[in-house]
Image (cartoon, rainbow, N blue to C red; front, side):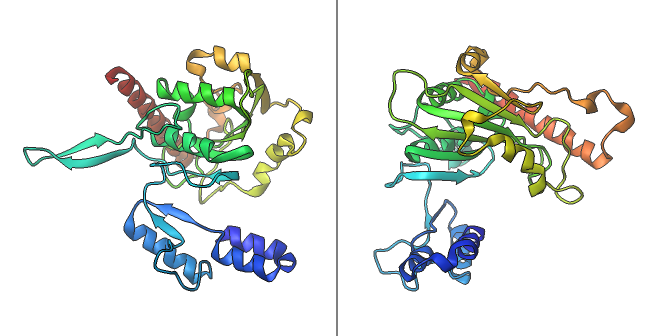
Amino acid sequence: MAAKDFITEEYGKELTRDQKKALKEDTFRGWEIVDNTARLCTMNLYLHGIGPEAIEENEDPPVVVGDALRELPDETYDLVLTNPPFGKKSSFTVINEEGQAETQKLVYERDDFWATSSNKQLNFLQHVANMLRIGGTAAIVVPDNVLFEGGSGETVRKRLLRQYDVHTLLRLPTGIFYAQGVKANVLFFDRKPASETPWTQKLWIYDLRTNKHFTLKRNPLGYDDLQDFLQAYRPGRRSKREETERFKPFDYEDLTSRDKTNLDIFWLKDDSLEDTENLPEPDVLATQITENLGSALEQFGGIREELEA
């Protein structure tokens, strides 16, 4: 809804009648794996004036019911901005011969994927990378485990760094998601034509996490909190970037020489670990402990999967 409202408010007077019709009927599409949720999404779109006034028999509704990861979309795109669903490994429930329910991993085997994995976030990262046109740009929210997980995670990172220009990583602060225990980042990369040499020359990492404390209610993340990052990012002028305390570049050789091509890189000293006189509020501390435990469990889960492979 916000995307349509922004386009209408900022550019509505410049749009022709045909462009307004295309914005209403052909611009916004979605995939949803759960039937009931898809119906709610479709109803919400129609209530906000989005979608065709009538759907022909062979036409799809604005929100299609299906698994977005099953195959590469028919179209490629110049720009992909996405926050894929976080959660557990992809799985489904089956009834065995004894009539008992069993959980089995859901693995996607696609010719365009670099690695086969049951990790939904790794699969979405590969999916988004292949959705881009040559010259296209993506910004995708990924949890920390995508940056350090071994096995298929290492394969995906190596291929992404080599075949794409992975130029920016924003380490997001904790306490900004409804789900507890989520540590996330925004990964920015551009698709490039085939080359014998790696496209990633430098990955610039901005640390918005260390010594930053946010909560959804008492201290929510706001637009002003991102201003320093926006200035450091320098859209359209990335060659003019300058290193700061929170913004540092890492060469391709440095990245690929790290164990498992680990991109979970930090350098700032966490003051809260030593400054006992100025500890965060108890609810902030409780949130941080929950998030750290959740992150640790996720890492151990990745180690277990590697051992079972």
